[in-house]
Image 1 (cartoon, rainbow, N blue to C red):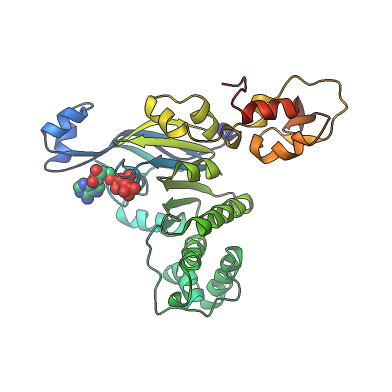
Image 2: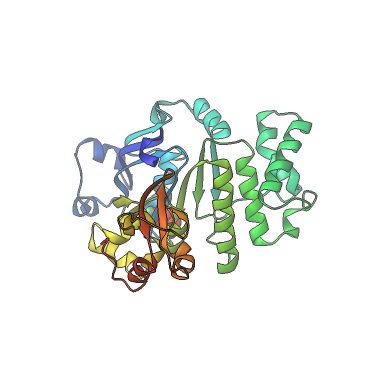
Length: 342
Ligand SMILES: Nc1ncnc2c1ncn2[C@@H]1O[C@H](COP(=O)(O)OP(=O)(O)OP(=O)(O)O)[C@@H](O)[C@H]1O
């Protein structure tokens, strides 16, 4: 269970205002409304954001362009200073750290990948991937060995001697991912890392990220404006609108229980079978016989063919223990939107 894991990153009541006198403006008021901000000619890029990211989860911040995602991420990595609020990284107050401590933290504990990041054009793929270790003063043999490992991990073995210009956009992005992983970060910030890629490559990279995550179990804060990408990747999603987080929930809960009309609008086109887990639609366990076992966290779409093709029900297991059963009937109900879970 994600909620039982240690907290890696936490923020409370984070604000970022842009405009004249932004900091002093907040010091004098509790929670300014959008109207008050407008009247003061201030942009409320982030307004009162709170979130908790736990070890090993992919936490996605999702929102349309201008909703404040990048600004929030930058406040959380302290690339910019929030106008107000509290941010803790592994239990330490991020806002109280000195510049030197922050640099150290970003070098050793945080990895970052952005939509448009700069590979160093005059360095090879290997040298680019090893670069953060060079900055740390790691010796050449060690850093190149580590860089080779991460390049293999992202599918670039054999390209070590290439230069960035000899690679496709997707391959360049993989180098960026390798470079951010080479320091073995505890927390990985990914700000729209696949948005500049064409849809096919983008899906491939999403699969790649899930595969990497299954192996590395990083804690990931991932930003996207694409809800489909969010539900494919996320353990939990925070939906942002006009600088505010309007709901934080699992993909399944967002679709089944949207907190606002805005979230409902976003989620209505999502095929339910892609988000509803077997645990949610499982029926009480019968006496059997069963066709086989399926994990409770699987999504209905992932097993629909297998369950439908079977005359016998499948057992549904959570943590190795049977919690119910599922048969073609429940799968069909979800597929045609008749499931009882909602
Ligand atoms: N340096 C700045 N000065 C003034 N306003 C800013 C600045 N940076 C961001 N903003 C404003 O803050 C709001 C949030 O911007 P932000 O870039 O965080 O949104 P976003 O959700 O990441 O959007 P996108 O997906 O387009 O990157 C926008 O209204 C933007 O115009």
